[in-house]
Length: 121
Ligand code: FES
Image 1 (tube, protein in one colour):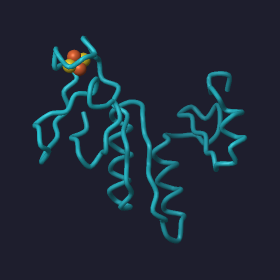
Image 2: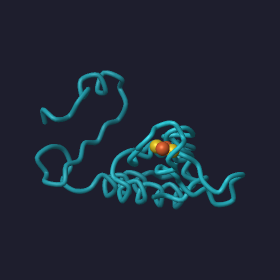
Image 3: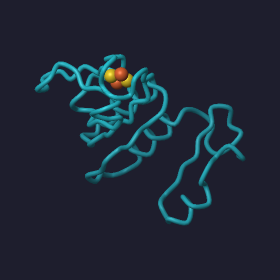
């Protein structure tokens, strides 16, 4: 519980908050994507919404899949390794299928991207 930063501030916003931990030590036991799927499935209709996600790539890919399933806009914060940080080494390249350029760079174009415009790492 002490590892959950800004919890008081988040709770004061009045936003619905569901905490999950894989070991069940706090909140719902299991993966956050399971809780998100349950939340979306329980809604009678999903209002136009934006999903924001950051964290491990596998988790973000699951969130993006849910966003597509429910026709939600999704923004992902890509946290790849960045060697130079200013667009020279190309180490943070992210494919952008159908985009004006073949790749975007997390360091100079991101790190937050519209999930519909990139190929998730
Ligand atoms: S970190 Fe070098 S191009 Fe992005």
